[in-house]
Image 1 (tube, rainbow, N blue to C red):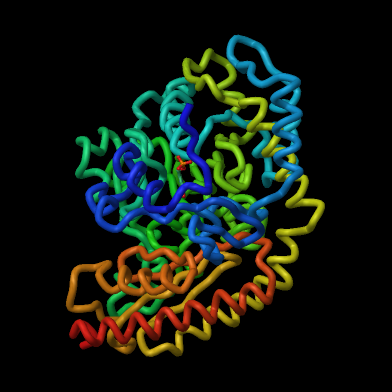
Image 2 (spheres, helix red, strand yellow):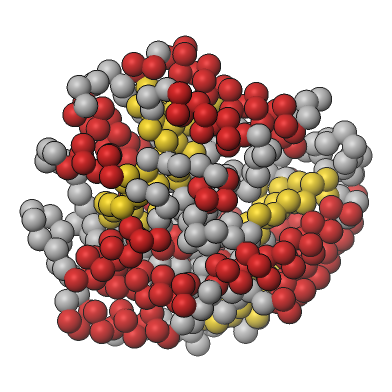
Amino acid sequence: MATITNHMPTAELQALDAAHHVHPFSTQADLEKSGVRVITGAKGVWLTDSEGSEILDAMAGLWCVNIGYGRDELADVAARQMRELPYYNTFFMTSHVPVIALSAKLAELAPGDLNHTFFASSGSEANDTNLRLVRTYWGEKGKPSKQVIISRWNAYHGSSVGSASLGGMKGMHAQGGLPIPGIHYINQPDWWSEGGDMSPEDFGLARAQELEQAIIDLGEDNVAAFIAEPIQGAGGVIIPPETYWPEIQRICDKYEILLIADEVICGFGRTGSWFGSQTVGIRPDIMTIAKGLSSGYQPIGGSILSDEVAAVIGATEFNHGYTYSGHPVASAVALENLRILEEEKIVDTLRDDTGPYLKAKFEEMAEHPMVGEAKIIGAMGSLALTPDKGARAKFAADAGTVGYMVRERCFANNLVMRHVGDRMIISPPLTITKGEIDTLIARAWQSLDEGMANVKDAGLFV
Ligand SMILES: *Cc1c(COP(=O)(O)O)cnc(C)c1O
């Protein structure tokens, strides 16, 4: 029997990968030319690749490894749970101890009366649940016309048909005939790119008031819910002006619609509070969770419901569920992850100590000649690249051309930093130390310098 090991030459691994592995969000044909980077191990914030490089992962995988890599406790819990009860379902009035314990723990951690969790294996699945759930909720309340869900352009809510339709990524909608009917989009609160001559405060209010206008235009009797990430992640870490969320909450309070906070990235400490809703001061009826729930050690997500939403949904049979809803191994690992986050005071340390240090260093990068805006909240930050800060100008190339050039330098400098268009974003493990923050910032500056030289050579810095 052939086995594939970490010791196989990189070129062979790359060839097998290109031949047989179809990658998400990648141009497969490019992989055959350049070859993938093969990650073989990880510890803390550090990845190791098949060439032995030590790479600082400033994205925590895909925004998910909140407690850092290599925690044996989670491996031990998973092995123990697999021996005791590797699988059982939660359909048809059955349950098991790990999912009971996790549900109770989430009720304790989540704010307000968000006390009831419906489980999934991912954020996409959880948002699919939300889509069916809010429409079912209004049907049960005798208001079946309330079906439309309002979302935002450039929001990311997942990649399944339902969740990608809830999202506002036009490139995703273009593939596969999306969006499904009954989703309405308003504009995002991205002042840097779209604010024009308005002050950030006025712009934040104006963008929030688009929600009110949409409710009026669609008719309150036709609107089920508004869904949004407290801080947009995949859209480029868009930190809204401070006027935005209070106005959204006012509008949700005024009209009879549900507020769904997609906490898949913001949840479990990312913004310096347990949930992004607490950081931006909102009271959602439903929260979507995934990613940091297990720090990515197991695939698990869910929807946390308020007492009222749970009571309405609970009065009838909700014909919805996944084979792996509340999977025992994933639940046990998530519970252990939450224990570590809590007992090691990881969220408090980020809020009070490492977070402010990271913020000071990160925001200094606004002094770089190619960085117009450097903003960070907790451990999610974004640099807006520009050839002209004063004018908040775009480059004379397709959006993403310059971002890609800087990302390429990050890659060469053993720093994982992503680009979204011409923004560079970070979302490191919450456990990153001050020394590691210094390394991150030094590598980012170097990559910006080298990237800018290449941008100049390409004639794009004009
Ligand atoms: C990643 C993400 C999702 C989708 O989660 P998956 O586990 O990839 O399905 C949904 N919402 C937000 C805000 C996300 O960042």
